[in-house]
Length: 250
Image 1 (cartoon, one colour):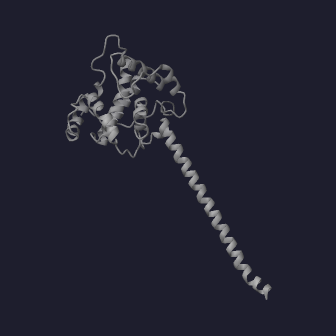
Image 2: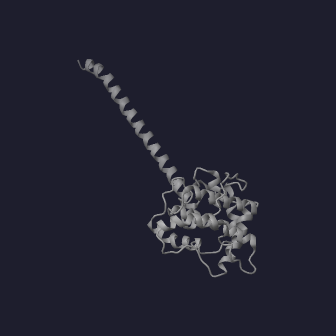
Image 3: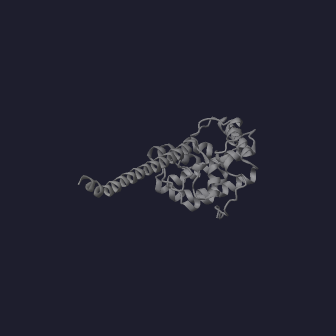
């Protein structure tokens, strides 16, 4: 009798055991997937915090390159998000920090409301973007250093104006790519550009000025940046082809 019962129940026991093993294996697989996803997400966040080239994800290699000109200021001021494709704009704290500095750089009154800025800025930018930081050179300023500094700040402030909702994406990209083309024509490598930028920043700071970066950049820092595999100034080829950009001055 007992033997008969065991024979009858044995298949059900085997099925139950297999189901338990299947459930256990499924649970382990889910835990493994969760661990991998969590690890990858942490690595992405850490890369964004460091300012690695992986944080440059606009979807356009040319636009990534154009934004990388501003990397020292952008990494210091806006860690992550500066070169994202899904740019959500600036939060309240960042807006309060960026707004007066961007308006001052662009030569606009700080008491203007956002609607007025959005109406006036496109024409102003078309007419002046290439003159920013180059209008009043000081005696003894090195012109190429001033140009590198101007290229970096143009990339930073144009992107910030877009983040603040004052520029349409098309005009933002036009100006950024024209500015990038100017940099490529004036310099032959990231090291050459970065060295000139460091000198240009020193020239600018010597006039008692300040910005969000708040410090000088040394030639040693530039040399370190261009030697780090994950830094955009090493990972992005200087000779990156830039997409044809309509003349923003039209």
